Image (cartoon, rainbow over all chains, first blue to last red; front, side, top):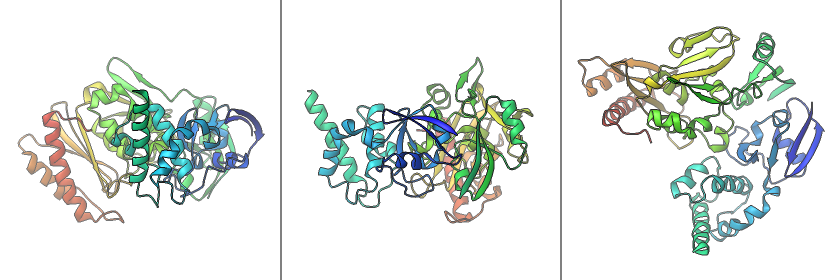
Length: 154
Length: 258
């Protein structure tokens, strides 16, 4: 099937097979931040934004995305740059494998909840599994960024 | 591994229905459960462009399209005001936001899964399921129906059935539930729907002369529970008694589900 997808702002028209998954499509286009983790739609490593909403690219047919816009971490560098240093400062990246999915989902979180509570953060990121950090350091990193941003605005 | 030979974005329900009559074809909802299967699908039928992704409010009901996502239910102010946030409480523990942005109401309802949080809530709300060929079927009848090759078009919930309290228990957040419980009070009777037993949810109506504790004990004794990797039948029974009693007391106090 011939499809057109806007990937990180760039329109791509391409022939794909009926069972091609979005994760394979974006990785074919060199978006290697998107990782294949659990294969059971549970880990959040493959998170991308589809028309601005976070989704699991491992569970989405590429055909279904025809005519839509997809963003991966490669296309969200400016937004990510604001807070990833705070996460790194808390030692929350460790092996780094889950990081891109978590960062993309954090961008979605901050767009939806500009001033989230700790519970909002925990809840929104509950679909991003991390086997290193224990999650507390991620939470501290995001909280540190939010506190910094509030201080900056004051 | 799931193999799909051909993909069709349906242009009408009629076209989707005709294609679906071939047993080698299937309808894709959120595709999350389908993807886990090891099978070959001849034609995958996508309902995404049929306008089934909206929640319409009428004078007495909410009509929830089959392609509405679980995340849409979680965030819908009308449904959550009506039910004391039961929709949010029901879907919020399901995996993560990314998952709920894909999982659909139609997929959850058609599957009639034992572990379904949503099915438990819709049974407690005495919802109606609208099928393309069979028309309107009450959800209590729908769960008993065989898996025919009909299409779930939408689910209708009545504004008169919003007095519910939803709770569930999980061993870890985002896992499948060990038990789901939704209690209700409408049409002058109180009851509880108990799901993830691990079988499909069942409805238990409270007798007028029963105390809440007696009622919870009766469900504990009469509801069939099973064992699986998440819990033993015995544990589920004890959990059911406590969740039911707690949920009814919360409902009586007018508390929100979350």
